[in-house]
Length: 627
Image (cartoon, rainbow, N blue to C red):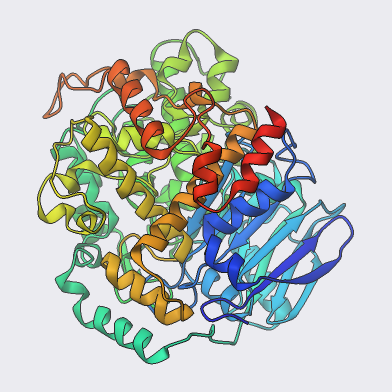
């Protein structure tokens, strides 16, 4: 046993039904830390190049970090990864709530799931008692019914359930993995991987506090945050939560509207945080160990747009994707769409962006109601919008096409519709427009997971001296404009983005405003290591480079590090009218990023020198063997 980790991996082979425990030594734990680090290690070691993402050779990996399961703000996060069926490359999606803490409290750092079951099963974990249980009776059920049935069977009302939902059963590439019906590991099509293995759920109950080296110091830091978080950048999330970004982004001309063709929404007030609070928000929830309570729960008692508390409420990303992006200004519709996705296991970002693409196709006459199951799928048409979400979850009619995302749908349709499919590497872009955040656009372009906002920078936060306070720990000493793509801006993006990746490795939530030094102190207290910000930053770079190397082994090269065509076309109105990064400027920034990261410009993969510097030269052997 190691402090901060248990030093234990759980391996489950669904083909043979065998279950085994594997030891993880301190060198492994310190080198790869958790999250992406664990996921990338097992994918590189065990998933062959070209393996079918929906085949038995793929791995589905649940990973924790040294902070996961500790009674701290952010202690509820865990990560899930696989070879993505959506992008063909690295998928690593993180999730809050309680499941990650429960898994860690059960005595496990990571789960490696391989093979595929012949019949539906679920994995039951109660501390060291692990078994595969039949799930034929759960197949086809919505997430709430499955969760309640598993808890009843186990006799554990607090058992935490992670599951793929009906969308994953139908192998929708936009399928996510739901937890407690309200928290999603949303990106990359991980629900389809789970469904392809006939694994309907992973259910866990744990009763042990993860071991720590210096409990007194860890508890003191946790107490400090509980008493002082209202004086930090976390305070805003305890009031207006993530939905505050509707107003913020609209004010900057960067609220994605009508499939990113506009940057301001004329009815943004109707979908704002303030309107949700005064109408449909009924309570707040939180994640394990966190005092902020940023999760909103909504209830709509309207038969046409029913939304129940048990499915939580929409975050900003969901609100933006189902609201302005699709021309919808009714929160009842957005709340109902959120419930449909959570009940069926669909990624709300991917679903919203794909539907917005289809709506624009309908507006342009490229799709008619005859193509789309008789539904008039144009901007603002709420009934058709909600009906198509259900079709996507069940692969019904044209929903079967949209269920695999906008890139595949656009390629199937043709007619230049790919030019307004807002995706990178096959994954749809979140609700942050790179036309008002040039550095964010760079991060989206080079991300190994495709368009992804979670391990990215948001330029508007780095335009003031106070905004870069944390980055000063890395030598980033001057704020820069949001529309800058200079060498200094690329450097800022590199440090800011990799520090976000560290949050993933450790199990921190990005909304907890711990300073870099405090994070290093927390890791030291949990693990007993004589660690530093430098070591933790290098762990993040190691994990990021491993993900890029995995992509290279799967044939994903520099040609895919590009933004959608539309992002290089300015929006027509609003504060950002007439402004957009040019293709040439973004391509130049990508090359600068490669150079600073030590990546080969011909392959987009880390060089041997960089991999050896990071202590993972074995990956260079893999890359060279395939060259």
